[in-house]
Amino acid sequence: MLGMVSEEAVLDALKGVMDPELGIDVVSMGMIRDVKIEGDKVFLKVALTSPFCPFSRMILGEIRQKALEVPGVEEVEIEEVPWQPPAEPQEG
Image (cartoon, rainbow, N blue to C red; front, top):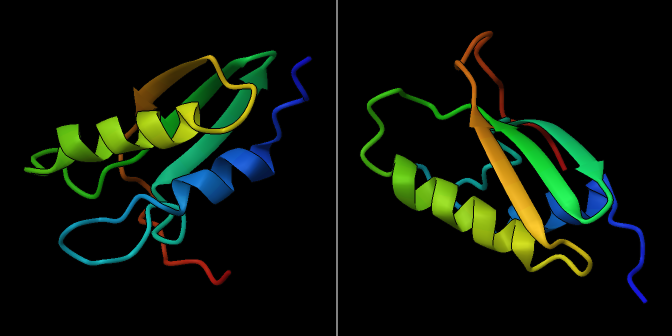
């Protein structure tokens, strides 16, 4: 029996994904712009710090992998969104 997937559980897992240049996790950097959950599927909107980020494929791959590690998550869909307005690092 699968439990309900929560936004909090997904965000906690994504805190394990670090920006390799800054050493700050993608949640604290404000790169995760939206989390929607429908059953066992997670939809993420992710704003990369630069459209030319050399690490974008790696970061997006790690985001997908960490989200799939959340109990109950079977599928992850990621949409890249523009980095506007600029995000500020968040506390917590």
